[in-house]
Length: 274
Image 1: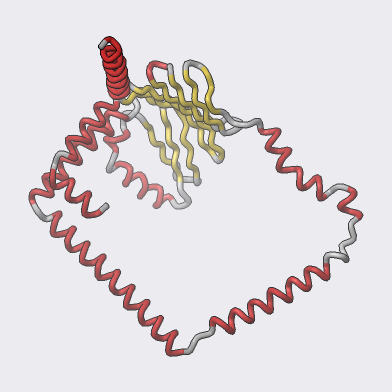
Image 2 (image 1 turned 180 degrees about the vertical axis):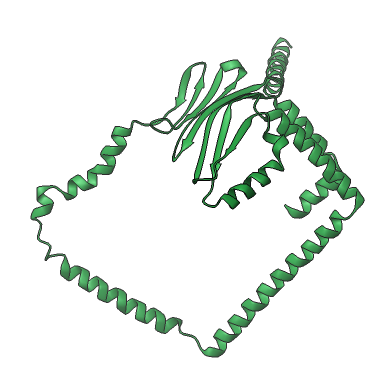
């Protein structure tokens, strides 16, 4: 009896630990920070901190690309030194430039290459002779392919008509408005809390630059708090420089996703077009 109670106690402790772990994953915020300097060459650094720094994930392109995972300060994954990789790459060239390779006569290889080319040509001619089919069969195959393409176009047109009819329904429009509201809340939650980003944009034609700025102004409320955009009309340039910092609570995003999927109409649309 005592052994059975001990087993139940161990199972209960394991279940409790798993529940605490799941609650911690969904409630403890994930902090992120990053810096970027892009102008012809990209220099970026991005870092994620889980469980208040017990688990960190870093990605960097400074000098060399690195991706590293640390648990309690212990590195689990890193990049191999660049010297060993360069040695592996230069090994064939060294072998080709060795004196033994230079002393080998080049005339011994020419007959083999000539015979190989003759064999390839003979094989190609035999393959073309075997694959040659009558004109009626080729015409029939072409007709079948055209019919198949028309059938696919018809099915796509039917799906577009069904989608248009579905979007015109009041219930679908209400579901899409609700989905849009939840999506905007998620984007507002995950956007950087502190940001000092500056985007400098300039295209070849000043008219194209003006058109781009007009398009960006349509979504100005989404990026107004965390990125500043400067337009340059006299030269072509794309540069982004600055840093971002924020946090993400998984429970908040998961809650809004569940509220979106609670709508039966949204589930029907996903099941129909996935």
